[in-house]
Length: 97
Image (cartoon, rainbow, N blue to C red; front, side, top):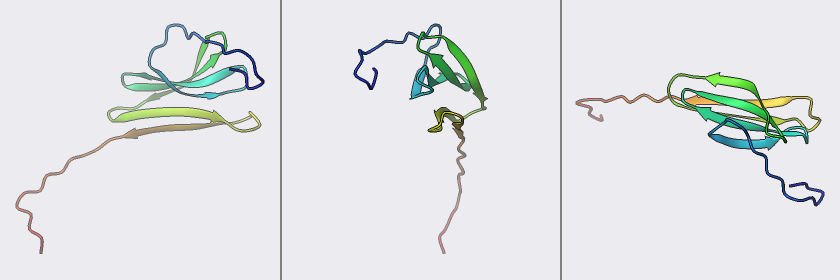
């Protein structure tokens, strides 16, 4: 929806599933996070629904996430990519002293 008071607009993204975490790009598109098994992709989606893969974050195990947000002047893109990998340790015969 335009902040200037325009009508709401639907953007149909072709072929992609699992879309989340969006932010405005340049007024002509969006940065969108997409999840696939074993990877997270950061996409640029224009207002016609065409997609360009900007970053393919491939990590083994854990939970992955990514997103991108542009700088106020639109010249830079801040990226986040992380994974959470946990270990479980079991202690036997543990005594506090």
